[in-house]
Image (cartoon, rainbow, N blue to C red; front, side):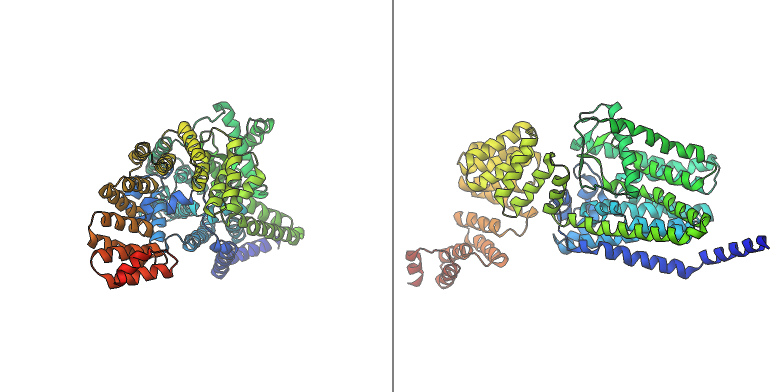
Length: 629
């Protein structure tokens, strides 16, 4: 009788698991819930932590230069497919952040559904599949990957990464070579989105393990293209990082100590998968390695040892831990690259493994303790609600640069980077006094960082305090001789002091380093204009317009150059274009009035002069009388 009951129970369970409506409703719930949770970010702005250099200051993105996108790197990162999506969005909406945020959320929702599908294809139950996908979708450690526009590379590489895993799984089940080819194609797309995708190659061995494949010649041959692609991408990534100067093989720590930094990071990531506490956009390196870093090696090795002992007896535990390990291993900063040794975004794909272990543990507990099942599920629901609330509240930190860096300063008050970046944002928001306070703090914390001196110099420049500005630019260039922005800014400061030779020396060097640096081009064009080298001024201003095509002030100045060269037709064309772009400045109308007068068109010259007066611009009375005669 008991045996019959077990058979019936097994049949019922199989029938329930194959119920397509349940899976459909589960997918719909995941879609709606995940999208709604992250939807507040649709109102958020860009942040000045790489959003600028990746998007609205990236020439390849601005000009939709596909060749440049696929041949250049951005601060050491080669993510051409990600940059291509930015270029498409920039072409559609320019610098309006809504579409960028929307696409990040949609990609994350798709990744959540692909996780749901992957776990289902692996033969795990609806409960496990749904819970893994739910955790993947709502976990607070997802915030950085979804809400930070720059991290489009996470949700994009994750999308292709998961598709590659799914098609490889289908290949193993159906033995159709088309699925194998599709897996390779999506792997390539994932690699072009973010270098982290290299971890897919060893992860495929876990899929083989899951499906009980024997290690044979065919299995090895199948993996060769994956590992070759991963190796080539890894070498290219290291080369780009070295070229940028972002690859740090030691910072202040020798390799043996960095191993403990890696073990500490490994353990912290595991803990945060369950209890995501003290989250930050930046986790700066400690001044020195404390005892907790050395002690972290014990739990780290203990976790890694679990698959060794459970390899044959607990497939889920082995798969989950190794999937996490294989995908996080390259990101543990044993070889440092970047400002911090931890990053929430690094867990985007790796956490799938830990979520599988957690979900399976919940299911097993519910099956073994049927009387406590309601309690277990109640605790689970409360836990998911707590994660949801944490994500919703923590997400607000990313509203803009001020909220972001204020939060980092609160958690890491002795780190210079957030003060510098907050100062940069406040200066752009016309709050120079607050910006200056933050720059001073950044410099006091680390006097050997070049960038804060350049930024503080801009404050002094805008105030007209040229001696202080030059002192800061000099210090910045002393610390970093090829600092292009500082060279361009010092050239402008020399220009304001009418030291034309010194100005041209700096600006020429800046443009040798970066031929289309907009600030250097406009500053040198100004110097040429003051030196009455009008043709050279036009040439530089014209190059500048390829970067900033709708700058009315620059177009107006080109008109003045043509006017000085007595080419009134070209001057008039430039002034017309200027006024089309901005009809609110009286100076533009007066300039057009002058050229119309020079061309003998006094009636229209008078109209423009009177319009300039209406806009509050003072016009010489003798000139007005001349036009009225």
